[in-house]
Image (cartoon, rainbow, N blue to C red; front, side, top):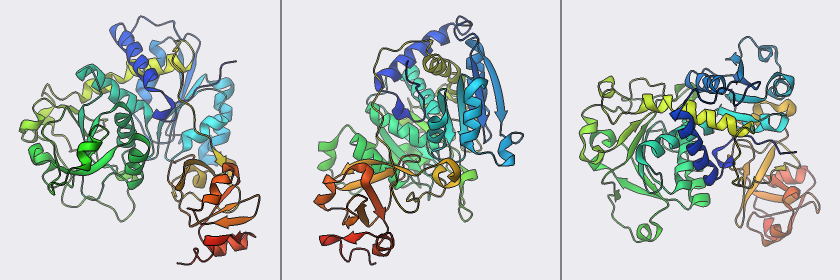
Length: 449
């Protein structure tokens, strides 16, 4: 029996699989009605705990064009969720006799990963909090593929709210995997989160340096820009110009709206938000740049450039249908892809103590009835672990072994001998002692601030 494939993260697809999806999307785009029997009898369930227009409708349109059917629970306001039903139980019901594939949007980060654990059918992540939005990323990559013919080596500006935009986070990871260069032009106070930068550096070899973006004109006039590249590590190691790496020209500008629905109560955009206008696009470095936006927009892109041939955001939304047709056909087994999938990371349940994930929006905190906190080990030296659901790095000062009941400093070589599923993470000595663990060697005294 073929294992169920889910699309929770863009990392669930190899680069070869992504390229094959582009080829399939090209075929669907050339004849949108030519595959009206491909998924006959199949049903997609749209479970949206947050509002959506393009993601939900494009998936439903995609399945209908493939000859399948749709059941939809938009915003879940009329579902059993308002009665307190857990996400895990909803997935077990819907992923049984109701549907053959589930598209889920949920405010908790890591919710799609949890859903995949309980589902009997493929789960597609339609956005989980500010974590990831892999199908939007595939749509964005596909647009670069169509407009530029390649992704490798492109220079792409990510502008606006880079802190909370899940589309930006997924897009940045994918661009790094393809070998593109990223120019971060954030709204002040909404820079790319450190954990995203850290992952880009550690997993994809991306080196961040200060960027000199004067050639971008008014778009980046007041931004503390960062240049992220996997292409020039040797050059950057010798780079000492205090003004930053000069950005001479870009291939695409990816604008994002302020994600106000995710802001903390004290957060706000003071002094106005970044805005792309006709004058902004007159900068010489943007002469050949296409303008992208995941939509919906507010005022960050002036309507006066809608007619500019470089503006493709409405084409971008339209191309969401063929790429999502390709995703549905692939996950339901109606289109075979011979390329091997990337290996999935091993996840381990947290052995003892409280949930160590520091992210209050993580599904391991918000859906506690059916969630056992889990981690993935991302480095042995130095020891580093991330939440298996939301990917946030775990914070700890001591690490124990559940077998020996000893604890160690995180840099102890003795930890290399401990099985990952025996690792226990502690905030300090008091927590370790309360759970019956004892110090070994250099771990003594590290728990005190």
